[in-house]
Length: 107
Length: 123
Picture 1 (spheres, rainbow over the protein chains, first blue to last red):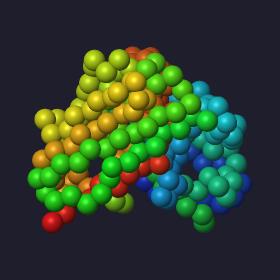
Picture 2 (cartoon, chains in turn brown, yellow):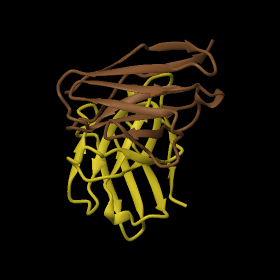
Picture 3 (tube, chains in turn orange, brown):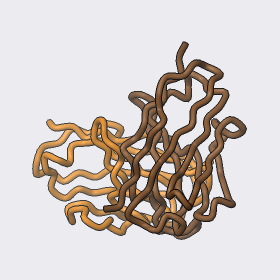
């Protein structure tokens, strides 16, 4: 199985900050990586697919990059509604796997 | 609006069975593979199972293989998850989701999610 390791697991930041979350795959997955945002009690929401393509309706403050084994999600200027947990997911091969999550909290 | 609505969750004893449903609307159901993902309380996301648009191809996580069965009724735009031999570790919120692209396409993702249904396995 392909393991995904996100770092950091917890991140404390302020409104207006620029933050970056990293996702490392245990083997190459080309660009078959998605990023999701999840708020407490809510379903995950797709932010980025194909490693770098912004899902329709997602603010342009979100961006993704990477290929192979190293990927990043960047939020250029944090807004109050961005404080949530973020997950990466590989869809290169079954079983599809998720990273352990990064909880982004308000400083 | 594109929408997925799960139902069927509840409290079940260990060893028991439960069937989850996911009613889809707002898109051509037969054109897309569908999946189930679960999330144990306070934990991360775990992919459970996938089914192709025509229902002929299914895949399962090792943790549920042989106990869970995914199916779909394209005439009713509904996805199912039949769960049997349930264990305490199956306790989770179960989400259904729609895939966005074909298997093997690097753009594939889960673009539409239901609100989730809670399954609790306890005596």
